[in-house]
Length: 253
Figure (cartoon, rainbow, N blue to C red):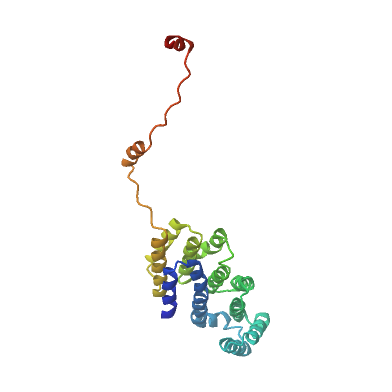
């Protein structure tokens, strides 16, 4: 991961933050997949303990091994078989794996569809929210700020780590759209979160550094001095000469 953060720092120095955001996607997606496999390892067994068949377990493991080995087409086919006939827990994880495969092949729309489907059927709130987050992440470049807000804001108050990931992506969206003040506020709130992981803390600090360089915060205005300065700086425009009356014309003759 050290190399990832070195690249992040280099991108910030070169002020190519939009490119940086696109490079974050696969890393965060990988972290999210780790959450599925790690946190899910325990909770997932609970989902399907009564309905899981040994065959489904073996099929998922075989598909996962194909996936890790880079045999994506074969893995996708086996994951699809689990989607069609596996217990609900395996169906959810298989959908998310299929979404990751679609994303790796550049099909963000299909990936988002699969992630959203996984979120719809998941009986576990953490996995449901993670799937919805990943659906938004998959289409980050295509979605407007308002669309992202509609998808992510309901997740921002959720349990860590998904709530924190959603808050970070909203901050990144504000930064992407040059909503400088909002981005600064969102990153500031993230920076003081008690449960902020170290990796995210580094990304937040780097984003804040970028903001300081790219869009320094406006200095407070001295409201007492402002009117006097304004009156000194602005000279009254010369008034046009009033037309002379007939009496003035006679006096001038």
